[in-house]
Amino acid sequence: MDTLTYALSGALVARATEPEIPRADQLPRRARMWIGFVAAAFPDSDFIARFIDPLTYLTTHRGITHSVIMLPLWAMLLALLFMLLVRGKYPWRAFVGVCALGIGAHIAGDVITAFGTMIFAPFSNWRAQFPVTFIIDPYFTAIIVGGLVASMIWKTARQPAAIGLAVLVSYVGFQGWLHHRAMVVGEAYAAEHRLDATRVEALPQPLSPFNWMVVIPQRDAYEVAYVSLWRNAAPEAPPAGSSWLNQVSASYYPPTLAAWKQVSRFGPTETMMVEQLWQSDTFAAFRAFAEFPAVYRVDRKKDSLCVWFNDLRFALAGRNMPFRYGACQNGTDTVWRIYRLLNDDNGQEIADALTR
Image (cartoon, rainbow, N blue to C red; front, side, top):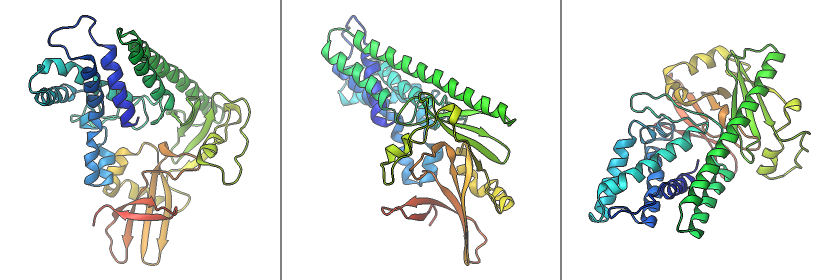
C-alpha cells in the first residue's frame, strides 16, 4: 500500500479503539488520531536505504521497521519522542498503545500484498505474504476514508470508525475468497495439462479485486495467465494509442478463455550461461528478493555482455516492468558488475550502474 493509505488506516484504528470513558491522562481525540496517523506511516521511514543504492533498498524495504519483533521498541521510541514534543503534558503511556496500533496496522497492510514483509527481522529475512490486495487499491483506501469521514460527522461515538474498520476487514476477507478462486483456476489448468502443480500462485492486480495473475512455476519456465473472475466474455482489444488503463483492463480474460503464456526462466538461448550467472554471488541480493525471476534479455555486443532479469510479480500489460537488474562485463574485464535498467523520459532503456 502507499504510505498515505497506511497513515489513514492508523488514524482510523486510533479512533475505533478510543476508550469510551475519558481519563485524565488520555490523549484528546484529535491528538490520538494524529499520533495513529504518524505512527502508521513510520515503518516506511526505511526509504532512507534508497540513498545507499536502489538494490539495497529493494532487499531491505519492509525489513526491520516492519518487524513484529521490533514493534514494541519502535512504539516505545515514538511514544517517548511524542512525549518530548508535548513537553511532558501527557505521559509516554498515553502514546505507546496508539503507536503500537498504528505500526501494527501498517505491518498488517503490507502482509496482504505480494511484495513480502520481513516480520521476524532482524532474526530472519523470511518475507510473510498473503497476497490478496494490490499494492495500490482505491477501494481499500476509500473504505478507510469513508470511516474517517463518518467519524467526523458523528463525532460523539466511535462506532462509525469501528464499522469502517469492520468493513475493511470484510473486504480483505472477500479478497481472500477471490484469491482462493484464482488459485483453483491455476490448479485446474495444471491438472488438465499435467503440469507440476507443487506450487500455484495467484497475485492481485490493479483496477479490480476480480483481476488476478495466476502463475504456475515449472522447472525451466512459468505458465502465466491474467484472469478476471468477473467477466464472462473476452474483452475487446484496446484501440491503438489507448491509455495504459485500457491496455491493462483488456488483458484480463474469463478463466475459460484465459490466454496462458509460457515464460522461460533463463531464456531460449545461452540458457546454461544465464542460469549459472543467476546462481552466482553476483545476483545474490536480487535473487533474495525476486519471487518469479525470469531473464528479460541478453545483450551481446562487440565489447560487452549484459544479462538482464526481472520479477514476474510486477508484470503488467502496457507498462514497463520495474525492478529490472542485470550484470554486465565490459571490454576485457572479467568481473560482472550489477546494473539497474531504467527508462528515460522518451521510453528509452538506460543502464544505471549501482557501483561507480
